[in-house]
Length: 282
Image (cartoon, rainbow, N blue to C red; front, side, top):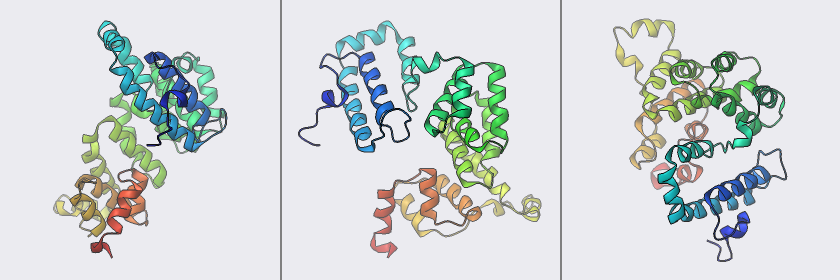
């Protein structure tokens, strides 16, 4: 840690900052510095610094007697704020936009981050007709940029409706789209990996193989040897199910296994380098 690093200075807050003030300061910093932001000047180094500052101060503020007391007094409100302030940083001002304004952002913005935020906000509106419209677009290959934004927000949608669509989309012939669908399914429930794997295997079998599987279930097994995958599994960096999903995708998309794993966000670059640089991989 840089000895001159001050989380309070990074976010421009006082030592007695409240939780809501801290969240607001972080939202403003994200909008200003996020690499994909359409507001202000993107700065990945500054974005990383304010994120680290937020994590450090959030841990301090959460332990303060004042915030612990507010959690007991308003548990429902606190849970809602955590949902909205999570990975996608949806604030109340965004949610207060009407449907027409959010649809305009989704359809007309040139910024992928803005489109994704708009799609999440639309799902959070929980309007039945609106949800149907979003899910209809998610099924269709037309309007790819809008479709990607909607797919990236579908873990917010109603599980019974979004899971079948995402399982179908995961089998598409576009790697980026397939990966988005798989990641959304895993966000909904990691136990869905079994269904993902079955759908992928069936989609990539020939008609003859799909017919024969009734008599030979072993056809559904991927037997391709992967030294890299085995090393990652042995080190606890990858589960066998994740490896199998990556191997099925590799059969469809002729890329290096490491590239597939990185697309899926199953392993980080430094983890791949540590395995590839080991003596057994040379």
